[in-house]
Image (tube, rainbow, N blue to C red; front, side, top):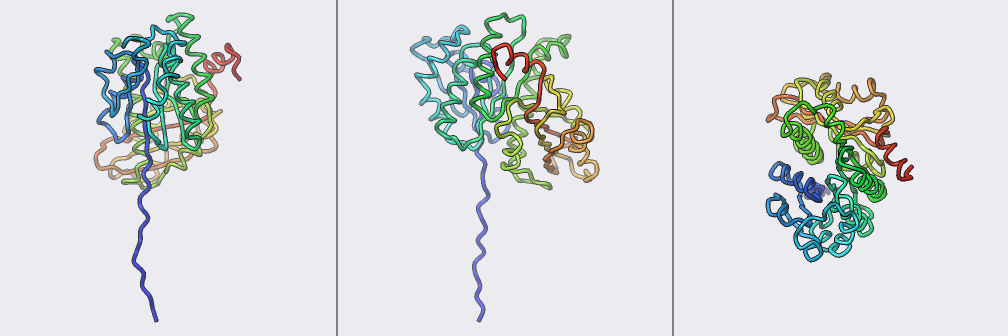
Length: 328
């Protein structure tokens, strides 16, 4: 006697990812990402004028009565007070994503005061979720107060999150200071858009040849501290990888990385030997011992795209910043 059983395929796991932009810089990030991926986008600010033009799936106005719809004036204490009052409003808008990434420029009241508090509250409520932040450190010439605000916030973010991707405005100035202002700032904006969209693309199994899933990403970045995120587009995987690393706005020593994840999106016709140059660059040139990589072949791309995430990296600037405020 034989029996036959219906085929029951498991449902495809869907990784829920949300990006929350705090303050003017963070809301600008959500606007730049809007319509470019399936990531849920939330814009959060005290400034009603910023929120009126922000593009996001949800817009959360915090501190409405405390600031009268205006900004915090760079007051980190006011930013914290606003967050304490409206934390539930923000958490309700965020929901329960598997991966939450916050974006902000540090130094002001909302990015430095409200964001760390909100992320700490999210971690307390959802200790099993993966939490990251993408932040920009202010120019040194912006003054001691904004630098101090940024230092305090960075220390708190490293405690509240699994990973923090840091971009240095001073490095942007050094590399691209001769460009017109709008062109220089577009470089940073495009890196954020490509990098964050690349995370979502990597987690989607469509067209995957070598699969990197959420568990792979988690193993690289979980409780890893300072991270580097780079994105490069070139004719070959090797050049795209080198470009991704060169464009990173952090003085990171890649040889100190705890691990790295490399995601390659190649055009039709790309061969395995050429595509595998991406992880090879990280391992053989930069000395990263643990490299996880994924590969997609996509008919809609003409050149090779490479995203690099290096976790637990050492940066002289960040090390000095944390030392100044008593961090490790």
